[in-house]
Length: 207
Image 1: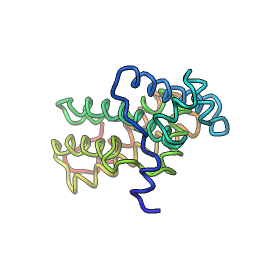
Image 2 (image 1 turned 90 degrees about the vertical axis):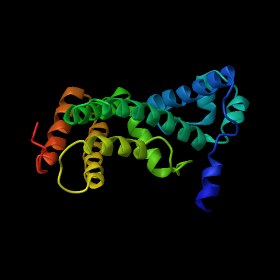
Image 3 (image 1 turned 60 degrees about the horizontal axis):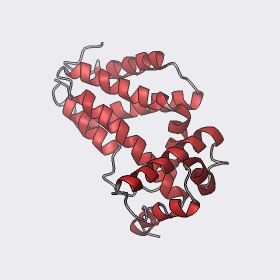
């Protein structure tokens, strides 16, 4: 099965344009999030999602052809929240403070609903994205490079951005898997790792 056909399999059956339809989709996605958090993958079925959302199973299938389509939409919803917070932090004029704000956004996003974030990380690795330009890593990479371009750094800004994203993702994902819910301590560790890395670059003193 090629990528186009596999992504079509998980595409929503219809888009929610009207207010009532939007509310239904929102209820389905929040129902899915609740089931994942409370029951994990074993209890994560379309019937359970529909029941929690307060809709019929037929209504769910009007919008999503299968459970994986619901999951992808939930991943995109959560990613869009993170992207908005990262892009807001990127607007901070002083580049070091912008990086700190982006670190904080990543930590808070991971720990806001830690069980959900951890399980969606697993599913994100398993499922094909519907759109290569979907909200997520690409938008965050763009925000990161725009901030780093304001600094005096040695080496490729693109490579530095990739490395920083890897450092942050690694620490936050590990904290999620370990059940580490101390956001302040995790922020401190992420800041130390990120600015420790940047400290090796000319013009980027340790913070």
